[in-house]
Image (tube, rainbow, N blue to C red; front, side, top):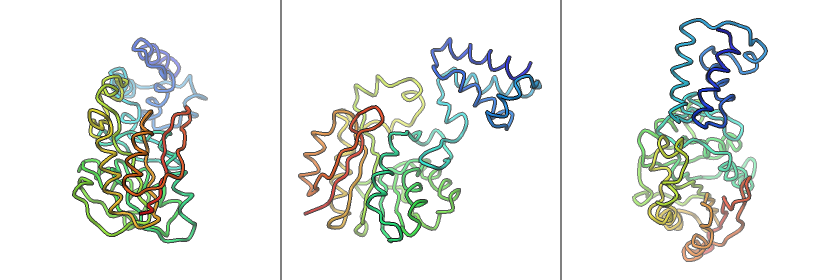
Length: 281
């Protein structure tokens, strides 16, 4: 069997499960199995695969057929400009979350040393992306998941930033530290109803603790804002990701906790996604 034949077979199997990215996913799986780039595979479609490679391809294909996210199967995800190790302990980085990096960098002058806190760091993709762009800064990253912190620490080491980030396995409620210049967070903000409506890829395989924001969806983000009010210095920036239709309530919580709202940025689909605020009292 050659590359073209196994790709066609795999795509047909995934399409039967209504997986829209069937062709791309098969190419990525074959790339993993053969340890070749997609480009190498696509210009050598008549090359043969052996029995061992075919067996391995079918193994990963079945994972994808059962709605395992392709990023977990591959073991990595590109985010911002960088490649991150990903496993089932962490939420898969989304392109929408790059808005946090983009907006935060505007408040991090090149060459200046700043102290940053990342609440709910997950894979560490946000804080690592920021420190790669602003190497004079230092950071603290917290998460309630020990397994997620292992992944974040691995990524920090992968990007040679293990000495720039302190990691703590702790809930934001119990975290007390010095004042930070800047706080970022992509907290869980999906409510109970919306959680049940998520795609199977997400609902069945990504960590619930990184998605579920309580019955209303506001429980975790409210804690982040209230605690950030105590942890951030005067005129420091709090930059958070929010869910669709959450702006009105979150603005009230921010104002109540002494924050001025600078801007609300929309994601690529036009949904309000990233909120920038400043501590003024």
